[in-house]
Image 1 (cartoon, rainbow, N blue to C red):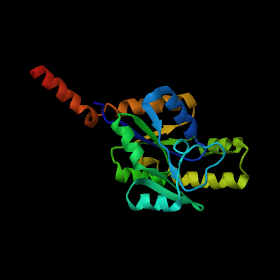
Image 2: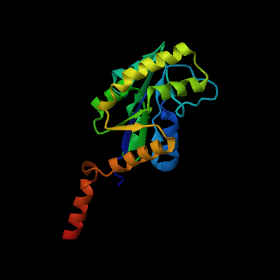
Image 3: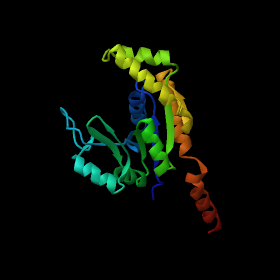
Image 4: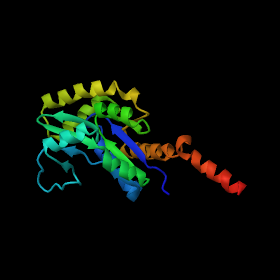
Length: 206
């Protein structure tokens, strides 16, 4: 029988490197890890695939999932809804997999309420100045948009203390190693491994 898997929540300001770090971690843990796929009501774009990039649904279907308590968290951005369906996550956890959930701070709060066994990591930049440089370095946003993101980042950083771990992304590979260490350590906490001690005792007495 597989041990129950690990749900790892990763939050942090835009531009702090969440996507890059998570991608590298998933590459390192291979078939053991999965990135949670969100559900959305927005139209499919380009070569996106249903069930790979998002679960694409109608607004009515999304609302039915919410009403049936089948969403771990959800929010509306513009005219579209985005959220995390519980079913696929629970299936992977039952298979003993590590599921990484890349969500905003508000979503992280909802996960804490509904799945308190989740391990939550806040990913932060070494400074707001570095974050500003990274955002401007993308070359895809106006100065006004960057200023808006920095304002949101300041608010998000105030919630870092709500998370189990804080990882500072100063050197990329160090941050990747920190997240891998958190995964390894989280799988060894007593509430997840005490049954193994019972098995050792029972085997010794048999």
